[in-house]
Length: 443
Image 1 (tube, rainbow, N blue to C red):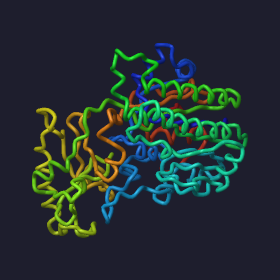
Image 2 (image 1 turned 90 degrees about the horizontal axis):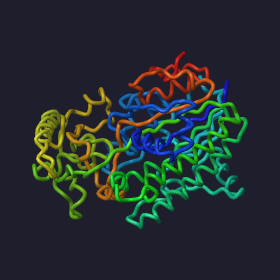
Image 3 (image 1 turned 60 degrees about the vertical axis):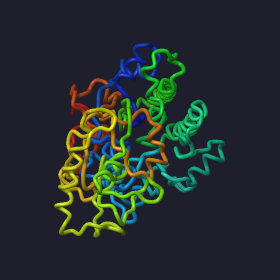
């Protein structure tokens, strides 16, 4: 069995990647294309890193694993709670009994925090500031003693600062991640090294508007700088792949596309007498609100049910009627920025997600994907969604090379994120029962 490198570059857009390759700007990605493969990949229907990463490393569809955002869609006290490893680890490939003889080194995959024992090592994807984010517990301290510090993505947060300051912070975090990842890659005992790099995604959110600014020099564009950074990272990884005669699988859990506006659906619900804002004008008055937006990334609307929420208003006997009344009103919502409808369709969450109990009560599917639901203001305000000019796309990228990959690609235009897990299984010579999707490679 050859060593396997599985690398996620969050936020890649195929058109942007191809353009930069064709212009001779990305030598490592060009090598991957010429010696292996780069192709199109579809991700979760409502694209979000959390959902995409769990699907990639479990082989499960969104409605099967139930992780739709970083945060749970229903929270009794209305404060969005982050998914933890206790919610998710049972799904992950490296936790399956068929994989227990495989040594994994894992870095920065959502759903791994708090850290837990694995056969190998684990550096988590923490959503809060913490110093306890590795297994073994002393791993991060050991790296720090070697002059290799590590901070989570939360260590570089967009607060409206100067562009160059933000890019420097993002680059610093990615550089720390990569230096430690290289140490883990040089570990000869690991069978699989998994790393998730995030700099493209994090910069695309705020600087996607530069892509079509033809008066701006390419070198000044923030997104180009991050693609260059990832090309350099990939170049380092290719050296390990060549040295180990290993296989390399890359993918992105989300694509990216331009965004015109996030639209606050709560404001429309207020106009329709379904929601009353509290004293701050941002969060609903829960004791007076019937419906409200769910957490960002879910495209969801929740009904304020007595059984589900601390200050619920809707009895279970009323729920079905209220649900359909709210759906009917949302179907009529206009886009406040043009004359188009706001939504292409509005459906019960249980229908959209095939009975998933954790789903929002209602799913709204945008008519125009440049205008998307804002989401619960608790987090949407904190991450400055109204400053963002780009958002996730369902269309993304995968690729690979190596002795078991380069000449074994299935020529299929309908590749899906759930196929990453069975591809990993095939490369490791394993069969995992809950991976029903097909491998991206020929048998």
